[in-house]
Image (cartoon, rainbow, N blue to C red; front, side, top):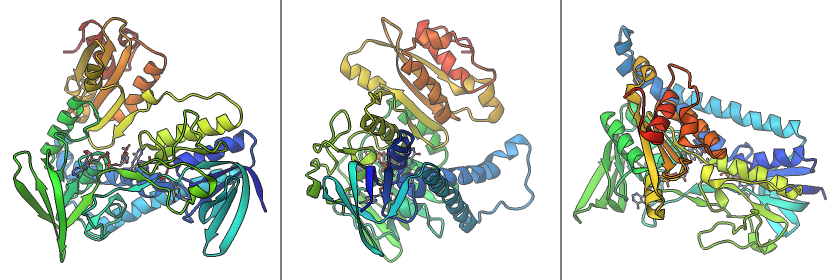
Length: 467
Ligand code: FAD
Ligand code: NAD
């Protein structure tokens, strides 16, 4: 029987990063993945394919709507080859997952294909078509991720009533896609299909989309996406989803308690994801699972069984690839006897719509609720030369700083390339910068980043230069 210092179950961004870090630290490492392609949700049916389709559909939208503004005329009709768009997405995924094979090889990590399940706290059985194999591991890291959640009355048939997984591999462009849930997935994939010509109706339970982000971001994104033709139905409680032939009907109750229905050819269910532990047989190792189906961990991301750790979507916290990656590194270093640290307040959140939405730290609503006295500085993207040059004038940067100390407490952005700009805010906050620190740093001109400096000037003592 093969013996390992560490076995990692699951090869998503949490699992593969944990495995690499363990190997870097000199531990004999195995990674177990039930699919024969590594990379987990993120690389196969999440971050990477969704961004590929967002980019492709963005190019199309630019060609039909914005090229003309730049004096570019296309003789004849611009056509979508949807099959090719999906094939390109698959090629991007393929290239990216092959990169993980390379990294496993480079770091001498043994890859096992099959479902990993606990025999006991130190033995893992790997079950595949080829049969069963058991390995011994001194430490195990559970990184089994998550699966799409649904509502009890919805039958996901994977044809017309679909999750993000199917929405990333459709064979036709929907005529009318009804999206249940105005969160990250619903908005990113809703925007893809709206750009490609579908009618898109987003039905959201809360009174605003992206309800966990700063309210100003919800408002700005709603405005921008409405301009693009997406229809929003907030404060709507979905009560039924039925399918008849190729038609799907979603029934919901609105704020006035009236029943409304939406009929389309596809319904995307994007109401969150659930931790995934099916087939893991955690009970054989005595590992405790919470009521919500997550692995219960302490501050060291250690389960109640001391040699078994868990990371990523299968534990509490934001379901984000970079959060899973940080936790992978954290656990590897913990096992190696180091004292790593993760600042969960500084895990940024990004929605890759256009305009993009990005946040770090606390929202204005959270500061109000906590009774923290704060100052707010905001700068609109339309006031930037860079934005006017590119034509991307939607959005703003908002900086929230402590009223007394001027320490930056939260940064919330909407606009072009803010997914990349948020890194400046994370860096500043990691070093506990004040708004004035940011305001006094030189930002290249003309860039979108100038909006960060201007918002910091506005937060410091209300002295932006360009509005
Ligand atoms: P996962 O990536 O889910 O990987 C878990 C792996 O474990 C899977 O490969 C699974 O097959 C395997 N596994 C499970 N059980 C077993 C078992 N018993 N034996 C062996 N293998 C097993 N996050 C971002 O930060 N940015 C984004 O842009 C982004 N976009 C997304 C878009 C979509 C459409 C979706 C669905 C998600 C997106 N996410 C994004 C979220 C991101 O994908 C997850 O947060 C991330 O993948 C979690 O990583 P993980 O390693 O915890 O788990
Ligand atoms: P989400 O939590 O972002 O959004 C779900 C939305 O559905 C919420 O707005 C919620 O209020 C709404 N909702 C819940 N129940 C509802 C109901 N009965 N009727 C109508 N609306 C309802 O979840 P998601 O969009 O499914 O994404 C799942 C996870 O994947 C998220 O945790 C997210 O972090 C991750 N993800 C991240 C990215 C990114 O980082 N860019 C992209 C995609 C997915």
